[in-house]
Length: 195
Image 1 (cartoon, rainbow, N blue to C red):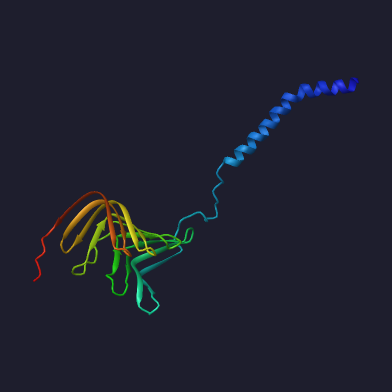
Image 2: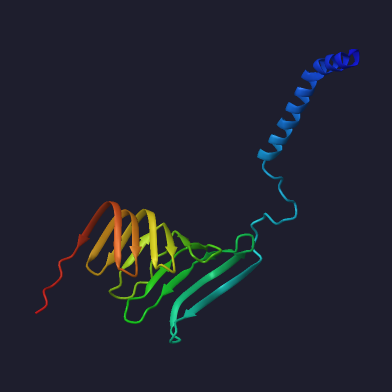
């Protein structure tokens, strides 16, 4: 009985130390779970281009062999870490039979790795064929497959009858719907009546 009592007395005396040890181990484990992983030093987390193209043009064709989508740029850099591309002076064009061409030009642009999104920065003046509608803004998000563009920045739309300006835009090329979001102003010239 004395051995049992002595064991219990020692256990009672050591219980705060055992409890603190368990608490310290739990704290160490929790800290290890919430810490960000250490940066890998093998270069795999770097965002460096693995290849570049100069003065290139890429064309996708429709089922009849006619150009459907064209992407051209003075330079394109491909980044293997996220499969994205950075472009200088890009021009993206969608051509459909019986419809006006849909063209986006810019000073700089990026294309996401999944090729679902493109962003253009400080678009340059559009290549303006006679009578075409042109849109100017300093940032544009392009969704090529959906044929949509959007921005939350100032926009200027020029067309043969006049100019419309506003802040924020959504344009759906398929439905031909343009939605300006705020601060909209415009000037239109009267058109001569055709006889």
